[in-house]
Length: 387
Ligand code: EPS
Image (tube, rainbow, N blue to C red; front, side, top):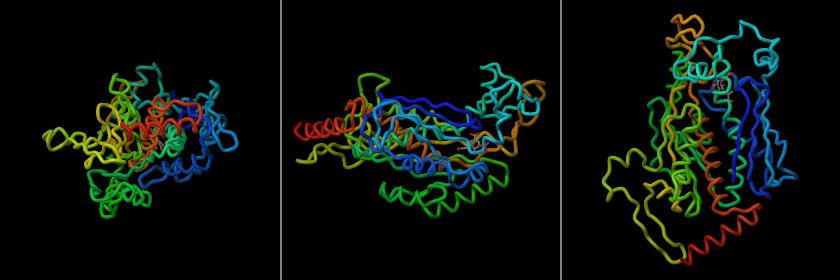
């Protein structure tokens, strides 16, 4: 089983993640993980913190030796390069507690209020530090290892931005590879140049008005063999697991598989992907409205996931709120944040997709070592051709 947990507060000394179940023999470098961290970190619309803190880097503290995974738990540590400015505010010691550090005006749309009520805290920082999307740096490191495993099995993951602040990109005519490589060069991860410009203008406007913007992105996984996930039980279905992974990312409010909500408008005859067969290729489809998943199992076509990100709850022009101590009505806390994180969110979407797929791959092909896993996959693919 592949499982992981992350720990760490946004402004604490570091983020940590422990990942278990990656087979031995997967070639890994810290540079590979750090490249993924950097893809997540920088995009147009991110906040000031990222402009002055240095690049995130992950140290691997266990589970990798001489460039290969050992099959043992892998620990990542991402230090907060800005820790010296937070040592007192985030101190472990009660002696450092100071009234001036307390935050008491919860932001509508954030975990602040529900968190203080549920955990009986009198300072919204006790909640917001962990609710922060800073945590996704740790998940991106975990995702990088899972992605490395998937690459060794011929599975690749791509993403691009479809929509920001109501500006919609036209990407229908692009291949997955082209959409991805254009997105990699775009400050907002958008493959459509015209839309990119409008998105950047919308972000500038939102920034000038103390506002925030959300959007939509697509993640595609190619090379997935038939039969990842399982139709036999609710919690084994691949689409359900991907949806959970995506909706667990901070500020994510919607997820679709393939044509998603658009399917509801169509007739069955106009939607379902007809089945074809060719000697040497096996069963295949000429369309992919299902987004590569039928009956909770991958069907061999690219897996297509779309995600909707809400505008962030930290507003420079704050909404009305109530002080949790005095109960007086006042505006919400102004907390430094991003204007639009959608481009970074797409990279996080890739990471959690990689994790969910690696979990399903491990279930299907088992194995303690990469070589054994690759052998199982090869034999399975041969079996499918002989079916
Ligand atoms: C975040 C608020 C901002 C973001 C942060 C997530 O942090 P700060 O308040 O320190 O400026 O920059 O994102 C990251 C640092 C990151 O690495 O993604 C929040 O409240 O979620």
